[in-house]
Image (cartoon, rainbow, N blue to C red; front, side, top):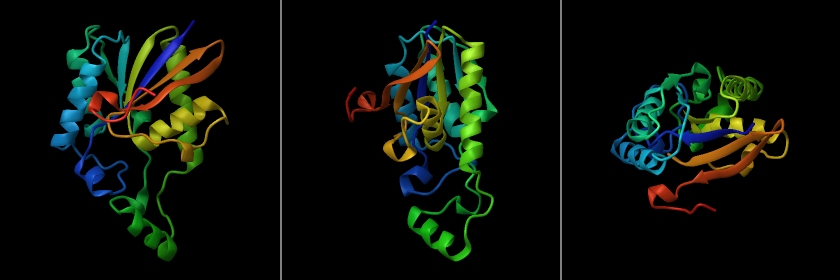
Amino acid sequence: MKTEIWLIRHGETEWNRLGKIQGLEDIELNSEGIRQAKRVGLALMDCHFSVILSSPLKRALKTAECIQSVNKSAPPLVVNQDLVERHYGNLSGLTYKEKAKRVKEFGETGVESMEELHKRAVRVLDHIVSTYNGESVAVVSHGGFIKSIMVAAADGRLSRDELAVSNCSISKLVHENGRWNIIDYNITKHLGVGSWG
């Protein structure tokens, strides 16, 4: 049985545009993010999904709704709390330059550990295989968490530093014979940039 996961990062927000670290803050898509969400929806409209799983945060949920609204298989949309972004604690809302200064002066507080992030990613993968075995599932989440899912799926064959996950990019994983394989990642052709690799 082959199980497919199509990983989609949410569209752009103002914090994305400004280069700010964005975790559990419930920030909505900006106008560019809405355009991106509509474009990714059209790119996936012919894909037969059994379900669309989405983070409950507004930026992801709106992106998922744009995908669902045009998908020809009319999949249900199910919110999954495990798909939220990493909690960045006292680093949220900072630019990466500001983050470096904050960490040097005060350290990190309230930041979700990489171990916890990995556990969540494994939980999501296990849930999909056990609940939707042999089916195709769309998962709408966040850049940091999508990286964690892909690293967990690669099982030591890939590091986070090797991955880029652009707004409304598509990455594809396939589970077959007890093993995950990464088929595509960070595809942005549908947005007018990049290629299908």
